Structures are given as C-alpha cells and as structure tokens.
Image (cartoon, rainbow over all chains, first blue to last red; front, side, top):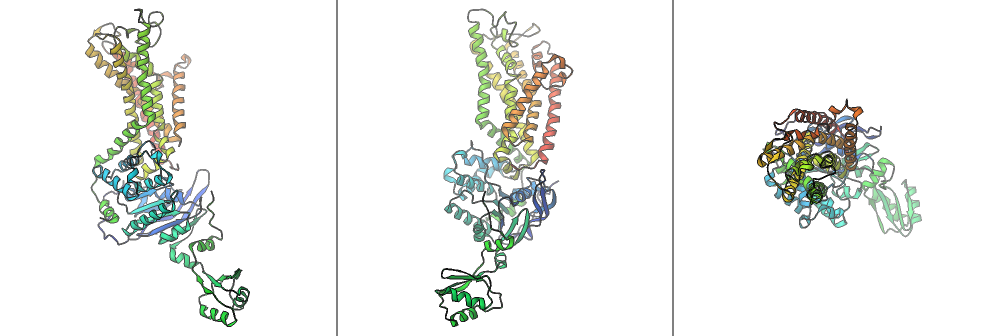
Length: 329
Length: 295
C-alpha cells in the first residue's frame, strides 16, 4: 500500500530539500540477455542541486533513469526518490516528478495541446478543473503557445522536444529528470532550455540532467556524476571534480625553445611546445608561480603571457577514465 | 507561487477519487480520434449498406433473394425483403464471424503495444497512470469499442433496412409474430449480446498486446489467432474442443428471436466470454505489471 497524503509538511521556498532527492544503493540491472547495464550504482543527488549525469552513450544512464522512474525493475539494489522507495511507491512520488526520458513521445494525430491534456489526465492527482490552464502555462513556458493547435506530427524535432519538456512541467514538481533535454535544439533553443533549467532550480526544484555534452553540464550544473560501462566513476560538486584534475601551465613566448629548457630545469613535467606556445602540467601547489616567471625572465625568455589554465570538466573526465569522451553513434 | 512551494503544497493536496476516471475519458476520445478506428467503423457501417443494396437489386423483380429462394447465404437474409428490421440481424450475422472481431482484434492488439511502439507508454506510466489502472482503462475502452462497433453495424442496418424495405410486425424464428416496437427492442438486446460476445476475444487481444512492443505484430497475431480458432471451430473432427472455443456460441444470439426466448446457449456464450476475459485479463495483468518498459 502506498503512503499517499503523508509526504511532507510545508517548507520554505528556497530551502534545499533535506538529504538526497535521489539515492541509490548498489543499484544493478542485468538484462535478460545477461548484459550488465548498470553495476552497483551508489548515486546521491542533493536537494536543490542541478545534477549533471554524464557518460558516453551506452554507459547505463538511461537504464538508471528508467529504474528511478519505475519503468524497469532493478536486478538488485535499492533506489529512493524524494525519500520513497521506487518502484514500490512510484505512484505516490511520481506526481511530484517531471520527466523527459529518451526524447519526447507524442500522439502525432493529436495537437500539441491535446497531447498535454492526455498526459495530464493520466495523472490521478491532477485536478481536471485546472487542467486547461496548467497546459496553457506549460506551453507558454517552453515557447510553444503559438503552435499549440498544430498536429504534433507536423512538429519539428526541436518543437517535439519542447512539448516533451512542457509535459514535465504540467504540475509544480520537486524533481525534474531530464534525459538529453537539448537534443535536436538549435543553439538558441539550447540557451533557452539552460535558462529554463536555471529558473526552475532557482525556484527550488532539483534538476537531474543527463547529457553527453560536457560543456552543457559545466555551464548549468552544480553537481555531476560520471558513468562509464555501467559503473559510477565519480560524483560530487562540479567545482571539485574539475579541481581534481590539475590545470595546465601555459606560456606564450617568442622564445619557446629557451622557455621549455628553463622550465625543464625547474622540474616542470609534461612540457609540450607548439609554435610560440609552451604548455606543461601545472606545478604542485608548493611551487610559487611567480618564481617560475621570474626564472624565465631572468634566463632572458621574453614572455607575452604566463598563467595556469583552469581544468575543464573534460580534462577531469579524461583524467578519470583515461579515455576521450567518445559520443559517436 | 513558485514551483517548489506549490509542489510542497501539492504533496498534501486533496485529490478526488473521481479524478482517476479522467484517464478513461482521455483514452476513449484518443481511441475514437485515431484515423484507424474511424476507418474500421466506416467499413463496418458500409457492410449493411452493401447487403441492403445487393438484396434490393436482386429482388427488384419480385423474386426472393439468393439462389434457391433463400436456402443459402447468411441467416435472416431471406426475410429482409419482408421486413427491413431483419437487415439488422442479417448484417450482424455477416459481420460477427470476421469483420467485427477483426476490428476488435486490431484495436485490442494495438492498445498497449501501439503505445509502447510510439514511446507514449513510458510517459503515461511516469505521469503516473499506474499499470493496473492503465490496463483496466485500456480494457474498458476496448470493450466500449466492441459496443460501438456493434451498434454502428446495427444502426447502419436499421437505417438502410427501413429505407429500402417495408417495416412492420416481426415473424420470430418460432413462427409467432411480435410488434415492430418489440422487434426493435429485441434488436437492441441482440446488439448488446453480440458486443458481449466479443469481450473474451478482446481480452485475448489485450494480452497479446502486452507481449510485444510492436503494434503491428500484436494486431497481426490477434487477428491470426481469430482465424485459426474459427478454422478449428469449423472442423467436425475436432468437435470435442468446440465448446471451449470463444467463437463457438457466437451465433446463439439468434435464439433471442424465438418465442419464448431460448436462453441456454446465450448464457453459455456469455459465461464462456467471462471465462476468457478472466483468464486472459489476469494473464495480461500479470505480464504488464511486471514488464520492463524499455521502448
């Protein structure tokens, strides 16, 4: 029996959700063919975060999301959504969760508005008296109001994606699970979605965002987890993840040969020279950068620029997996 | 009110148990707005028109229809020229073995598999529709389609019959005569019984539909099964199986035109349909509530 109506008491708007909004313990899915899609996943998504869920295609992201949404049963392990076990309490908790899973799916013979009316009426907790108004608001929010009366089969991929997002926004949600939400959108559309995600998060909604686009995650997410081959490689605040990978020392100079020699003598490793640009692994924390630049100048190396470039999430990912982020196919 | 604030308020919001039926209304309107459903109903409506016109042309010179004075051909056809109401019974006799169940098989077979195929099933389930609730909704809408399809045949036949042929007192199979009004009532009862005859097959279609993620495959399998069972039902050497086959008592609705009404086989038919609905409905439920939705 589900525990409807006893979910939470009132809480202030901006206060983050207490504890983890999504929490899995040893979550594992082995498909009938024997393929291990997700292997012992311990995921923890803090309340109020914009959580980026990263990984190449086939790394188990979508299987994980499907388990979280109660669409497939885990082979072993447990998952909790907003404090409730899924799939056992899925019907209690899912009205508070909006989802876009593996792209939008629509009834082509229905208009955009009628598609949303149908999805809304599938939710037994959705008030039919406010249905039309809520559908109208959701259409407005994703910029589809003008095309609401058009048959969905005439929609472009980007419009379908927006309609899928609108379906996730039919009700006020505490958690949004968005699987590749910017797929098929042009750069302008991507920016709009990013803005929308930030707005929703500012309202206190936790957003769980899966993507294979690293810069997208880096631009909007506060936290991230990286999956590869069905396993969770790392998770944490984006700033910490990127900090985990050391940055690069970058020197621009008309004398690259001398610069490389001097840096090598100073014990800097991983030096590569390309034209007038010399880069190297950032030195350990106890080395004062100013001493390096002084040494270079003292040796007669003329400097145009000198500094450490912050590591990107991509650097972190490569450092963690020892491989590139191959998203082909 | 912000999203989260409203969500928190929403967590404890009062919901009406009546709201749960919103999905049924949505399901029915969605089903009836599909071109395929409308096309099937159109074909079913055309059958009585064809029969009526054919009978009218053939009997235009005053002879009785069919070779040998009505000895062959579907039941009730020979009486259509005397009373237009009989076109209702004749049209149901023509459509019940193949056309009606085929239409039901298409709609039932597609009900779950078609949504899986289009990917809309996952969004209904995370809405969350609830698997049992969604399955019950699907079955209810297929049952309603059985009734609508039967009524389309019956009403089309009634209109065509009254336009092309005289109306009046109805001669029952037992030879007695009943008034036109009572005949009309019997026709309505017969339409309901014919619709009920399809409920067992509808449950089979629903079960098949939960087995696959392809709407076309489910429709083909369901209709193929219908044809196979109809063939088996027609082989005398297999008569031991016949009482257990879902179409075996379908034609028993004719007993409702006797005076007094002969209920035995009608009751057997309805019992058999109930049994099929229970068995295949449970199988569909067991399958659908444990299935991994990966489409």
